[in-house]
Length: 102
Image (cartoon, rainbow, N blue to C red; front, top):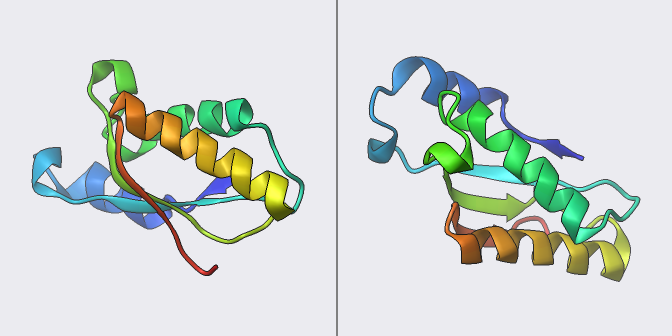
């Protein structure tokens, strides 16, 4: 599992003083091996501070748009990935979810 965060970290971490003035879009890159929704969710939670100057979701860190980068993992993988993103969206720390490259 990997997030495409390098460019986002540089922009948010170094150049933006007010996070609310930036609409942050990033992608979750699934692997060809499916992971449970719980494992994907936990991974996403751990990524939030990297994109929010160290703020965790408990401290108000959030992502405006999280995309699933590619349809890896087959039907089970896609279902589990979507369930993880939907849970985070329901909790409010990922505002919008979507897919790319499908």
